Image 1 (cartoon, helix red, strand yellow):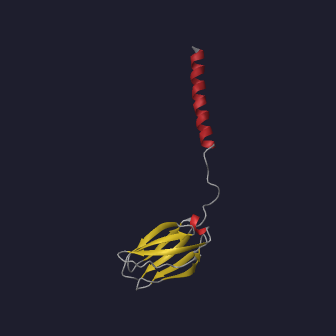
Image 2: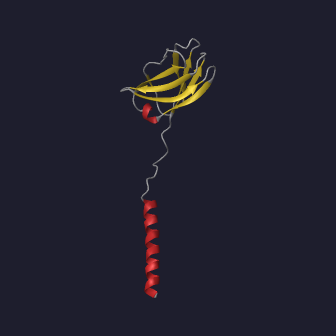
Image 3: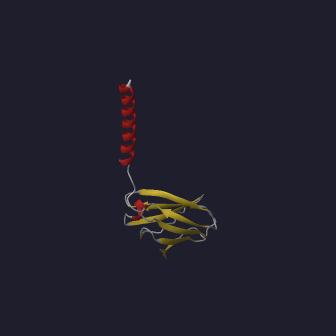
Length: 130
């Protein structure tokens, strides 16, 4: 009988050790996350604007939508701020105009201001500080 109890305890001990090993070997975050760049996008046009970041090599990502007359703070994914230059593009609802900033450089942790003018044809880009 005592051998049965020893086998049960060994099984339990093995399960506990496996659980501790799994927790110890799990991936951990190293240090704080890299700060993200933010865009303060002011839509002064009469059209809804869907905002994209476009990197060289045809990578693009939708980062938000700003309705007419509103200002929204949009976050740029870290993989785009580390690529050198990129382009910020606004696609306007029910219009063929696609205003863009042209090549700009965004740095992690910094803030930028973008203004879509009232006619919906021009995006202005200014550093807004960190």
